[in-house]
Image (cartoon, rainbow, N blue to C red; front, side):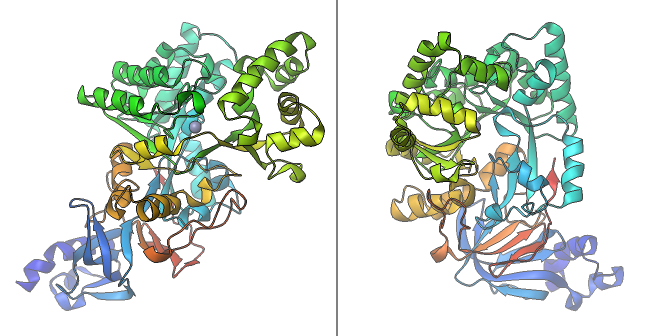
Length: 523
Ligand SMILES: [Zn+2]
């Protein structure tokens, strides 16, 4: 009877543990797992419940999981997790972490590990390079602290084929773009992303995106999109959602709406209409999900926030020439004024990163007063002096809350410098929307930060704690799980995540980073 119970474990052990030899296989006394996480409140993705379980890790995999006390296993190391939450490692479907993963000092991705994130997705907003193979090699040679999954981006393939040209592609150019997307999908991209708000993707029509999304669909990829308009900048939020649904319907692909929000006073209150559109399309058979970060401010660059798209066409030189062309000033002035109004004015734009550090921590309104200029003229001046990162306080609590309770909305960071979302989105969501204002249960928070996200991305062996899954496991001291970063200190590590396993390797051990770079590039 005992032998019968141990048999599945033994078979697995013989495959993954260097310790067991074939002759060990029928001697249950010699069964020894690498790690036993004992007596934690373990999240079960099927029942969506936490219960007291023991979880065993052998090599890179979870090799056993059972109610605490129902079995005895010998382990090289036992971690007592009594009173702690044991969860699948979180998966962040929208980051901008690639540059740091390529770096030699931030490739540990510690700002994500300390939130409990074990996998980050890069290449969102249309930014992802088509050369997945080269990136993978580069990252694996460098060593990375979390897993990474890649999307190929509309912006990068369009720019590679036709620069920043403000026109439709020729048939030949479209073909070249399709080939690049195909190459990336064959090399392991998880899907195709677009950022139709941004130049040069903004110049593309719906059909162009459909053609490229179709290529990703052929390889079971997803379509991840930063909408053409999250506000009232061009076509408007609701028509932009319609466009995304139309693209996914025509391309027959899973639609994922990135960092879902209603940006700016003109569209506040439209969350209900967005949700109705999504749920109606779902009812008609389209598979749709979204991600969201739990902050009322977005983070972007000042030029992307307030400059009209036509001003930025072609090259930086052309952009600056237009900014200084007296003949264009009147039009510029009125369009920038309007863009500022939508975002709540200069007082709602906080400068969070800029080479002139004196300006960091000031609003555009404050800088304008200091310079004795209008907000428009100040913006025109600043964007020419260098890259200005801003936190743009443009969302309403009510819209954020309407989205966050939807079961098809998962947690993300959209992490960028200058915004605490990069260091603290996951614990912030827990503190704000599980503890303080309990719109979500702890279990729903975990599910929508791990299992559901793995499902969306097609990551088959991750996002769940079950035998045969890769051991991406976190142990959280939930009473201390909180954001330490805020808008004045955006880069403080979060607290509460005590232990992190990446593919069975211990990366954070009793709150200390071990220096291990155990992440891999997921296909
Ligand atoms: Zn985006």
